[in-house]
Image 1 (spheres, one colour):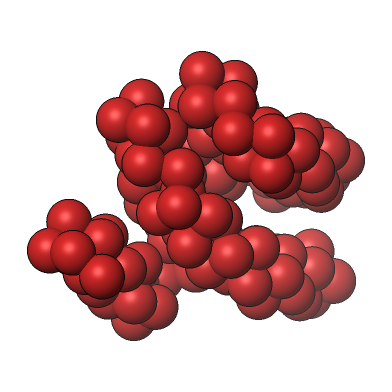
Image 2: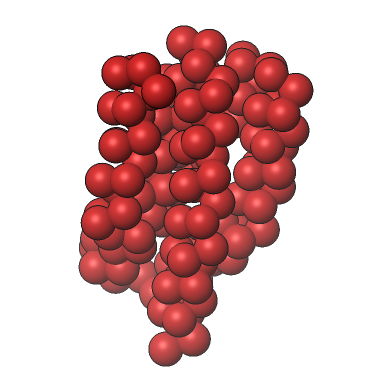
Length: 129
């Protein structure tokens, strides 16, 4: 691994300690509107797997431009629902894609997929409280 790769992986690993789903900030950003929170989470559950799948295809085909655009879209989706770790990983993928660092995009993508599973578990627990 070169220094750039090491720092990228370290950023992904460091994010493991960050908040997956910040329920408090999420509700506060919606003026504590529980109904709107539920709607946004449902939309996230519907849209994010499709975008994630499309991003995987772009990465697998080496399409850095499409990967950057999809990562940007995921970053926004994750930000809306206050999935901080996912937003950070998506931002990393967006930047790395723009730089043509597709091997590192793949590394961050793998971290993103694992974090997405954990995050959606937390979101489901919140929705079912």
